[in-house]
Image (cartoon, rainbow over all chains, first blue to last red; front, side, top):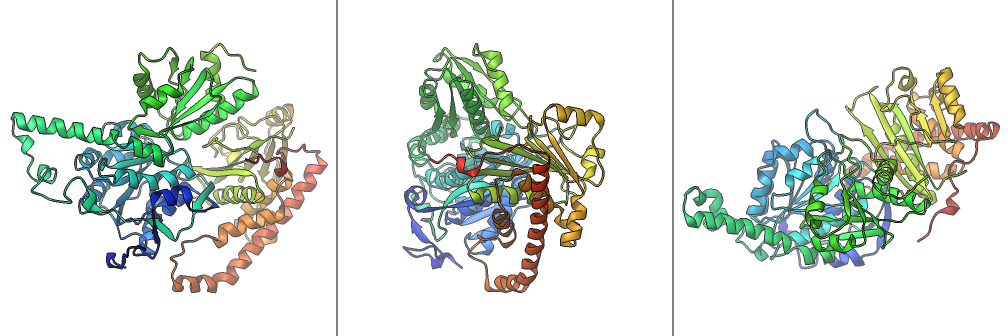
Length: 398
Length: 237
């Protein structure tokens, strides 16, 4: 297998090259029954991925392993295990700067070990993808689902999308490459899911055939020269002139940081198209009780909505699909009739509550309740959400 | 009254195959047309350590994820779950809903007077059987205990038939949709093992089927009310 085998019609593994629109919206689909880890393999298989670097850590080990199988089967160009997560993320950067479509996966402690790399990624404007299967952060040690780690990533300059379930993980991780690689975006993307709740959960999922795949990444469409050590940002890495104290160094740093964030904002129209909206709402449109959530917490809120409906109480679930860029306009629109906004979360700090509260500051009369919060692997039964509703509103339930 | 969705909690010990059983149970339910989800929860991956799996089955879409806090059915795979507290929740039936069901794999009755009174008060039926012996007698190996438990579950439910269980088992052990990039070498290895593999499936099926009949008869005997709505009630979009 070699990149030389690539033709106009087919990639190196013989898959027919198709548009992202065709792959996501038009190709006929069949029902399968699989886990999040397995579905990620299916997504990567259809993305003409040049390179993947891995390192084992629960709960993403299986996904990393399965991407390795894709390499063995000839679908992924290059695959190797890094020396640790810091090494992995650095190597991902190297692959991406060399012009390769690159993907990796990590979880919890791995994310934190690799931390310095994420803002470096965005600073070098590489369009790589990290699939994050969220796991609790020390201490005490936990391998269980808890998405506190996402709060550490919010200001890295990477895009962050959040998938709710196995199906969304499939669709999002394909769309992620396409949006990240747009020349006017061209920043790294983190596709997050809750570990175990998605990675290890087996459910039905609709997949297109596996004999089609995305067109390869075109590094010449990059807004920056692919790996050029004499030009910014490569020059920044080799010879950080910002070490010198003068006006031009301050201005360069500030404007580049600003540009990275502007690039993330510029992804919005593309994400609206490929994700079919930055937020999805379900339930009663005019409800005064609104749940705003992302990932598995959305699923739990949907269970609570169903229980409330049985009691004749209206509610609505607003699922945020992109966290960076944050969907301010869509959130405001979706909560305009709200009297109570609940933000259920799988972490102790309530990072999404802070995001929502800040976004709606001065724009809503609704009472925002950042609960329930569960952590360390605990489940969030609908009963826990209902209790918050009855304690914080004047609606009556059985 | 039969429900539109049920949650099944399976506390087991590492190595007993409860993850596999939950997987097959969900696949079987999915095969006949239910909405179904399965997931495991575990800490250190080692034999005899507590390991729980969950299956959720419904006639409506299932959003609930993670550990089952309020189960309709609890299946105890090993006596140590009760006697040594090897479960994530204590007592083993914590959170069980009214009109529920507990299936215990044990050769002796492990319920205390307190347990029995509480479960009776909320109309939860309890079936204690030595499903490990059952597996040894029929399949010739205690490794088929999970298949006996699986058959027992569906016999008690009565809404998912034996062919669906067969589909679930085959899906798990024959891997219908492995990667198409598999080499010829790999194929021939599988073919060589095929006869053995079919034997394994056959034994597993026999065990599940016998356990199915046993609990179906028991359910009639104790007048177990239907727990899950029939698949004909599945919401169609």
